[in-house]
Image 1 (tube, rainbow, N blue to C red):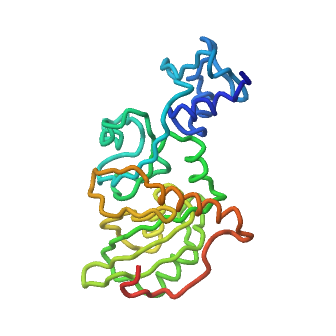
Image 2: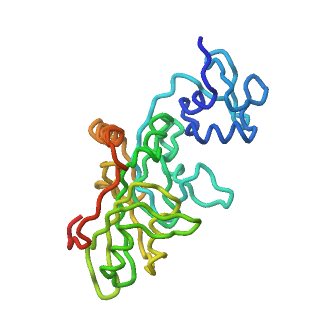
Image 3: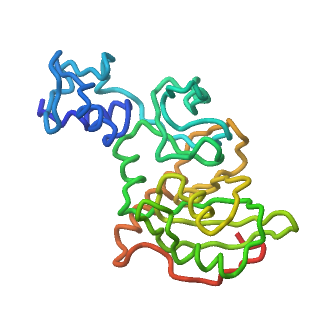
Length: 263
């Protein structure tokens, strides 16, 4: 059998994403037939013994799974946590395959999280070139002015020499002690929404992701999950394909800053 790059074999097995596999190889956690692997090495998935941190990789015959989960607040999206915090994997114990999150959702946030054991699919969703949209419902303590909305939409400095890309922000509801905003962004920097709000003086009380690439959270309750339907899979594939065909950046232009109750 033709040899395949080791990181692809690991990703195809469902152990982790290809990017994570490359990291594990670099850290010396991957061995082929008992010998440490290096980036660029190839192996025969049928005849070579591949281990990651001592665990044997099942190179073939693993069913591919595509899951959407309502991540509750208080759970981390890492596969394990040195601090003993609850991981989303604890919510998926009835799924026999090892699935891992596509992207991140911080511990204090909640909402839609996609998980899979299809490494190629996960890489496509997360690749910056794809500009897959992500929508969040965000509750802040302060009144939000037109000037703040404009700053959020056009890009703000969130530190580390990083300016956010243009996005859409609408006001859903306004009350004396809170404002509910809806953000749609096309990038995925660490804790991006929270850092954007902090940059313009807003205090986030609640943050919930409701949509990824056109797939909606729907009627799921915190801690519940469901297999992605064929229609939802097609929606995601269409979103990835549409971004490939765009000649521009794939990001939205500026639009009306006030949306009333429009989502």
